[in-house]
Image (cartoon, rainbow, N blue to C red; front, side):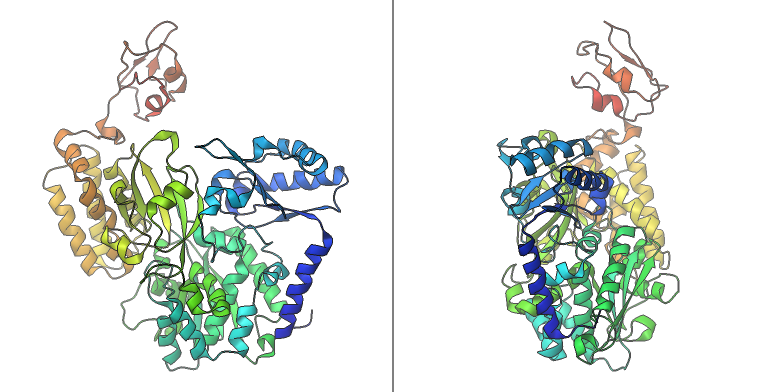
Length: 615
């Protein structure tokens, strides 16, 4: 099609909205993120299309595959628009009844609607479900609402209007000033003021500058960036173009891990569509400004999430950090001035420009403005993608939105900030989501991964797990990270295996301090955080492992042995049937017995026994 001019954006917006209204049809918004794909949403979508056609309703109902809806625990899910009826955990066998009842007879199918776990009340509308009602969507404003592969859907939601304003109504200095007023801080983990970073790059001399998007999301339990790219790729592209205008750059790269095939595919579609419309490339919107974007697929090295390592990777070199200064705003990609922001940061930019920095700063705290996206996973009922205003207490996020802990168990801790973040214990759950407040309790905001741990979690073993990840992902360039994390891991393994010594705790503290103060990059500097935070709040668990050779949570298998109490055993045989190695003998009307020589300490029998007879 012909390249767009600024006035054409409003024409597309209005015509798309009118077309949707004029069609007067029902739109079935099927979650099409990676999570829902994994639980069968593609088959559900195909079954819906087939059933709708079979019932002669194809002219009245349109099936739309969106990106991630956010409520991952309830997928595959679907929202019936315009009413906003929320259906969850759909399967192919549900579709004939759903189509018949909902779209022919006009009745909702109650068994497929959301039921509040506390009140047991059925809640039909998405907006009334607590998971959604307590959120403040900004970076996620389009999730589950648009087809991410149709650019007109994005434009209908004010897409690229912010870019038009930045090109025709603002100078580069005006753009940077609004970003500074917004108080937006980097959402990738460090929390550096975005406007200040852009200002440094703007003032750096040089004819060639670069804008980079960091989509190399490697934290265990993190899926924020992936979900944004799958649900709203144009928001990230628009943010990059505005950033390029601000610093006078003409080339950008999106560094995304190759393990995100759906995100890569939708990004590629979005870039092609934007180029066809003249929103990327030469003479954007007839403004005289030009900017191109390429996708660079990383191989999955965790260290390449660090900005200088990422840049070396794009240059074709081994992804290893370099000392700073000079900082990338002065010497970055190919030694040229470069700004790098993560996906979530860039997804906020267009709205800040369109609505104004003061609008964005209208929510949040004094030092942490706006909203933050979190990926909540682990021992929590409502696993999913959550966006809350800065300052929201962690307890609100985990209970009002997250739905609390499964099986009526108690929460023990929350790992915040990824593997190099910190464990926040239950007594600090009223801590607000704020960069400084989170740091005071021994964690970091990080990119937004939240892993919830219940009362059965061993905190020593959890520290070992995260340290194993950090040690494995160390690039090996600097001695403190390469050797220090290896030694921390050895000590933690010894403690978990019953070989710990009292002096190990002093060694852990001393080593952690050295690594934090001497490691080259952020990965090494924050690497000891899981050790330090668990020692700070759960030292008694370390002491029990070392002095009593016991694991209070019954998770460190080398410290466990299993017995069946015949006085309690109900002789049901469930443990016998579930044992994977035949270590349990059982006959009807007899108590089970465990052969310790065969037992591999997998905990299966302990978890399966509903009567507490295995100890």
